[in-house]
Amino acid sequence: MNCLVYRINNSLYAVDAGEVVGVENSLNINSLPGQPGGIVGFADIRGRMTPVVSVRRFFGLPAVKEGTTLVVNDGESQIAYLTDGVEAIREIDFNAANSAPLIIKGFAECVKNMTLVDGNPVIYMELADILPESERTVISAFLKQFESKKEDDSDNEKAAEAAETEASGGEA
Image 1 (tube, rainbow, N blue to C red):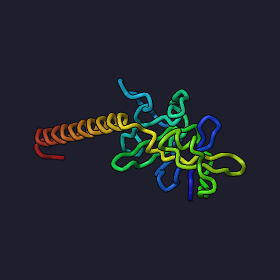
Image 2 (tube, one colour; image 1 turned 90 degrees about the vertical axis):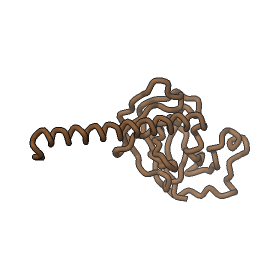
Image 3 (cartoon, rainbow, N blue to C red; image 1 turned 90 degrees about the horizontal axis):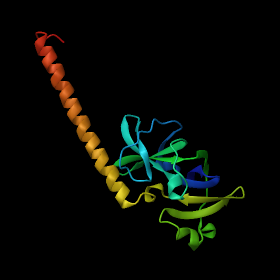
């Protein structure tokens, strides 16, 4: 499997590289009042308002607003997962012989497997499974509210342009 290997607190993790649509090294992350603990904030990534989720928080580590984000399309939305850094993109064989011990699989739904790469353990995760449903609901509600406001702003801008054109005698 072609994987993107990333780091959290000196441990290595992998995600299917095909799920990652981009890697961002520097984001302007805006916090919102009342956002859940796993959501660090929201950022404009390629013209889309995108929630930024702390992978560190999932492991009980303090969330930070600096690092490398893996941008993943998660069905209907785009989510950025903040990591400590990207190590490489490489082919990794997560076959049954290297299956994750039950204790690791029991740790979380998102941990799918593990193997050794160059003598280092690498844990394969499904990033989409990190977020609990309650946080997904908050993200969905915010994005709907943001899109609605964006549409209203666009309508107001078009009305102002039309009024300006009319006031100038129809000249653009």
